[in-house]
Structures are given as structure tokens and as C-alpha cells.
Length: 399
Image 1 (tube, rainbow, N blue to C red):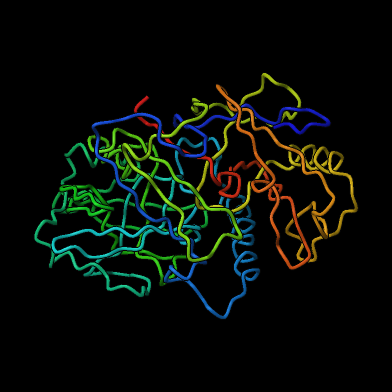
Image 2: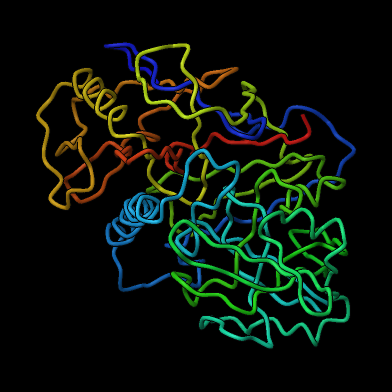
């Protein structure tokens, strides 16, 4: 990353997708079907998680503390940032998607997670399910539900997460960075998302789910690059393309962010090739490469502590002005007001292209008279949070 004064590179970031960053304007015709669904912030009145008694700043502080807890949980659980795939959220995800599974369709508010692959939901009969507001999916009532066998290709996609039951039925075992887990059967059923109805979609039917999941979510919607993700399974319909436009904080709370698929998910802008590389810490060498998790479910951007320190110092020097300490000790760089201050443009250097972060991506109002830099230090962990992604992200997995 660089700021105007001084200039320095933090990472040549790497990930597993081709990603386009832009203002999400459609640019080319396509014969593929396209559709759009709402991404509902957990703090929105549109969300089942919404608590009217909370103030806007209460909700923001909860989101910030989830980001901090995420970093602490990764460290406590010994999760490696060099793993090819791991989920960085559980119920702590910032956005929910409304889909349906089964025949007849049963609605599901699922956490939209670009950091994992498997779609899963709670089901009845259940060994150990957490309480949820929506009725739990009863597999016995779906005419199109079918459990999959251990010798099938789909079960092989689970890799080390696969288990095999006494009747040679395929099971899955997923554990997350915060210690939460979901265990269940791998099955197929009919998916309804947006205006699309898709038969025989592979998903996890969870009968043992515990940890930090809360009652307002029914499961998780994996949007990663693996074979079992919703994006990969919808590839014939959407061509491997999807985008999301996250509305900036401070926008009308009843306005939902949007996730676009297929033709509607084609965006303009610089194309950046992202593929996993080794993890490095040096903030000063333009040739260094490292990895970062692009996560729609984490609010803040987390950077290794030594890299963060260099960045914070550079941003503070470029801004000038009187700093003010964060009384909650979440943020390292804060100001009482943005009035009269010039916020530097920060450029993120990916291998293959640059992404320009404007002030709305890098500073956030956390209290009535407190504005803070929306990146924080972590230990051996790098996450590109959703504040940095606002108005910017589209994916093209077809490349």
C-alpha cells in the first residue's frame, strides 16, 4: 500500500480469484442469465438480527469488536494463514443472504462468506442444533432431498473434511477459526436464489452445529472458489461471475447492499489476478509477495503488526492534525473531526493491478466526535475487510 507522503509498498497481495475492482457498471452484453439478491447487513432493520434499542454507534462497535475477536481467535486456535482455504467467519459475518432450499422451498438467512466454500444449513432431525428464529429445515418434508454417497465425486471435493457413515453416506466436518463447528450430511436439493431455481445443488445438512452461531442465522453460504461453493455450482448459469456492491456506512439503513450474478455481475475496472503465495512481513520491498484473505464478513482490515505500524505512521504524517486516543482501545489512529484534514489516498498493490482506497474506505466515524483509521494490527494475519471493499468488488472465476 502507499500513501502520497511517504510512499511505500506494503504487499503485493495474492488470493485465489480473478477480481475486478470498480464502480460496478455493466460493460458488455451476455447471453447468460443474470440476477441480483440483497446483501443484508446484520445491523440493518431488514435483518432478523436487528435490535431497535441499539444506536448506530452501538452496532458499529459490535462489528469492530467482532473483527478484533477474530484476530484473537485465530491466534488462540493456531490457524495458519498459509492454509489454502479456511473460513474466517461464523455467525459473526456482516452480511446475510436470503435463499431457499427444498421442495417446497424453505427460506434460509445464511451468512454470505467469500472465505469458505460449503453451503450448509441446520436440519431436522437434529443431534445438537443451536436455537434459530426461522423454522429449522426438515429434510423429511422435501421431495427433492437426497443424501450423497461416500464414493461420489462431490464427497471427494470435501477432502479432509469428509467423513463416511455406516451406510456409506457422505458426511462433512467443518471447524472454523473461532472454534465453532458444523457436522452433518452432504446432500443435494433444489436451490432458489434471486430469480433462479437450480436443481441438485450440493449442500451440507448440519445436525450438530455449535459455537458462536446465533439464532438469527440458519447457516452459511460459501462463496469461495472451491468446487462446492455456490458460485462454482452456479457456473453454468452465471459463467463464474459475481459482484457485490457494499453501500457505505452512513447510508440509509434500509438500503441493502447488492450481490449480482452472471450478466449483471460483469463489471468494469482493473482486473487483478490473485493466487495464493507465501506469507511475508517486509513492508518495504516492492518485490515481496504475501497473501491476504478478501473477506466480506470482517468489517475492519487486519494487517500484521509490523506492517500496520509503518502504514499508520505514514498516514498520520500525511494527515498532520491533532490525534485523539480511542477510549475503547480498538483503533490506533483517530481524530476528533475530519474537518480541515486532508485524508491521503491509499493504493493497494496487488500482483497484476492496483486498487485505490478513498477516505470512505479507510476512515470510519466510530462515535459522535471520533473518526478512526479502519485498519488495525494483528498477529500473522491479513484480512481485507468490507470497509475497504465498499463500492469496489467483483469476481470472475472463469479465468
